[in-house]
Image (tube, rainbow, N blue to C red):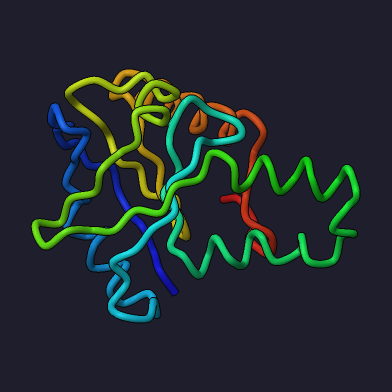
Length: 155
């Protein structure tokens, strides 16, 4: 199983290229992707002003329940549009870079510096100050709500 861990800052160049952090590239290579895991799906987050990076297998698993909906239903159309219309395939080049589409760069408010945040099965790409705010908010909410994983008892 692919595990994206940690927070890493890199530079976005004028052509929209950014280096995927080495630990994330290693996770993609060992994540069971055919051909070594050099492909991702990039899409805007539903909840935050950031870009999500999905290994192809994870993205396919996310989208699989669509097959259970009537192809011509409003629900299928809305969910398919939400998942696919703004999603972009991304290949990692031999230098370990991906190209971020202009629409996603604008959506996330990115400029020269970007932050990659690992979320286990996926990762996010943020504007650095927004990433710090998000991490602080998540820690505070988890602490104030006493959140724990199912099966775990808080200390």
